[in-house]
Length: 186
Image (tube, rainbow, N blue to C red; front, top):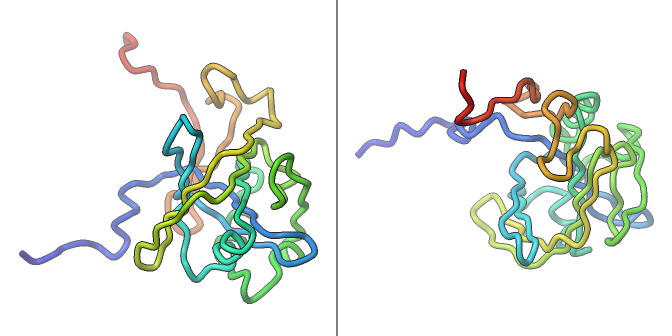
């Protein structure tokens, strides 16, 4: 059987929410990267997974400090997502280069983005290296919404207000636009 797998086969799964992951310590080194391969994997205990390149600076920070933050931002920060996603933290200090404002996290040592709309603070539980990517599985030690106006405790982000960026490909993003209820009459 001849494989017809396209080079960017994973784009079939896009658009996906785009987040900013931060790991490290202010006095040491900070890794900041864009990530769309983030997902909850367990409710009890609360756990998330992050697929991350094994050669990335942020991955080395997660391995060293054993924690990280997943920062949910809106489309007003799409340029930041693009900038931290297209550059290597091994080659430049992204915090300084892109004038990233950080804030202290509540429960982990890694900082969070000051302009985050919500944050998940996570502690490394285990990982599985899968080729050029590691599947990092982490315990959620804290999670909080900073933009209460755009979030509903029962239903999540309000489609009419929350502009969570969805990554299509390259520099192309879209966002939530309309609410579609399954089973609703037309």
